[in-house]
Length: 489
Image 1 (cartoon, rainbow, N blue to C red):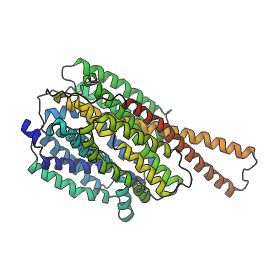
Image 2: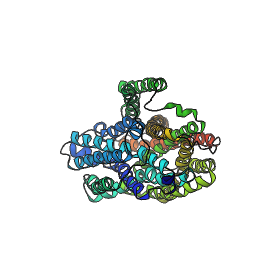
Image 3: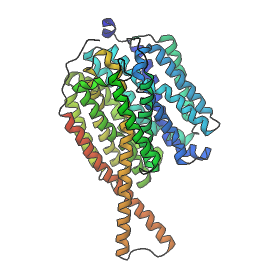
Image 4: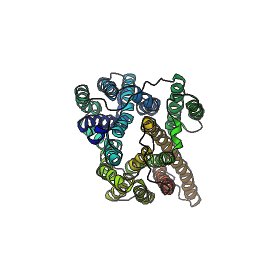
């Protein structure tokens, strides 16, 4: 193992990187295509949303179990199995004759993609010595950040020139090549143990995280007062409480929650949750503002977000090297300060803010975030003993999924609530001033104008709340310390 750490298997890691990259890219490619798919298969928005919700649910079920899979099976077997599922799902999606088949294909893809992130993180932690982990995890950040960020731009371009099936057809050759390279070139480097699967823990985990993700991700569409929404959220929380109790009472837990006894891991986990919630909200609110308020096309709105993605991509390996030299605290404080300023400026966008000004602010915000996630996460993982790494990576990835869904749902609710109250106020003010139009055409235009002003107010208000959320993360980052690494396995 020591020799392995001095000379990491770069060719093997490159195969894992490309596999994880296309899996994460595919996840965000489809979002822009949902309206097109909805028309082709003649389904409602609430139904077509299952293409992303179903994908998310499979991730929520499998990622917590990844600690077991990573310990039980070799990284070679696990990666090849994941790529077989992902490739099979991609083929099925490209030729799907019916909407139900397309949903099944997406879920098969998700089975493969759910294993990618935890597996890649564990390989990186095993392959690189502690003093070089920052640079290694910085490169890993390219997958975690860049793939989802360039997805909307690439998808917008493809959809302007081709049908939605091309989104899968373009991914397929890469998936096949990665699968073949994995079969012939991949070898095993992660340590394995003969762990037993606690079925009851897996059931509780699946119900808990699956219900939470479903409840929060459908709250924006169905409303918080819908029984299916609050019912699944309550079920999720109860199941997770039982899941945690179960993990503390068995000898071989599915997800070892005792990792939270390590203070820097616990703090890094908390900061990651807060930052994920703020980051996901920005990814939803920015296209909404750009396309609805400013009337910019989906492709050009994706293009607007591209410099932010490129900035994150460039900064990710640089941030990793800076982490190795200076630690996480200075990077987190600097990054979160920039993110807070960027988020605050987003709360002051107007009806006529220029395209390049929006691009500039969004890029600043993404630049700040690029300095936070990986250093904080790596600092926390560095405090864990080697045998705890699978549990640490599984926990981080699960909480990112859940906090992203929760953050998005809460921020969209804040926005909708502000929109409704503003629209009522504007209508009441116009009526009191005697400015209500009398013609049907004038009344229709009046409603559109009020709707746009109300939405702008809602988006600005939500970004202001997101600013306070990033301030919370900034305050928490003041308590980050460079850990003394536990080297025992």
